[in-house]
Image 1: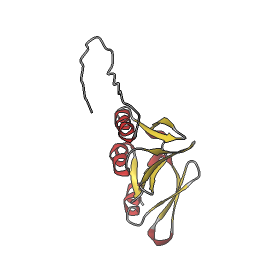
Image 2: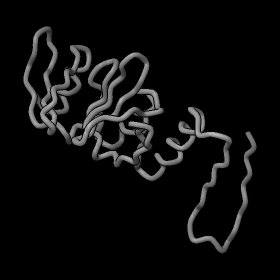
Image 3: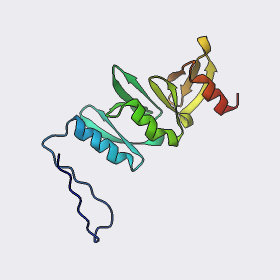
Image 4: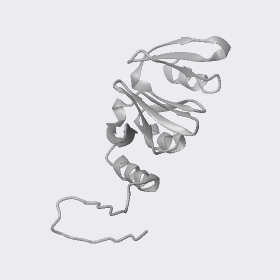
Amino acid sequence: MQIRLEEDPGLGEVQVVIRCPRADGPVQKLLAVLRAMDDKLTGEKGGQTFLLDFADVLYADTVDKRTFLYTAEGECESPLRLYELEERLGPHDFFRASKSALVNFGAIRSLRPDLGGRLRLTMRNGEAVYVSRQYAPGLRKRLGL
C-alpha cells in the first residue's frame, strides 16, 4: 500500500482519494474508519454500501463473527468488529448489552425484567433486545433503578 500526503492551501476541505484495483475487505474497512470521522457508519446490504448516522442505528450485534447494524429500515452488515463499534459509539449514548450486542440508549421504547436477571428491551422499531445478567446492573444504575 502506498500512502501519500499532499498539502494544498487552496482547498476548502480535506479530500481523501483511494485508488485501488478492487474495493475488497481491507479497503472497505479503511472507508469505514474514514467515514467515522463524520459521525457516520457504513453498512453493506445487497452489494451496496450505505452511510448511516449514529443516531439511526438502534442496535448492533454479532452473528457467526459478522457484525450487523439494525435501523428502523432494516439491517446491514458492518465491516467493523463489535469492539471497534463500541469505541466509536460509546460516546454517542450506546452501551454494551451483552457480549454480542450494543444498544442505542435513545432508541429504547420500554424495558422489563426477564428470566435469570436479564432485561428485555423493546426498541422503537418494536424489536426485542436482551441485556444479559452481566450488563443489566449497569443499565439499571444508569436509569436510577
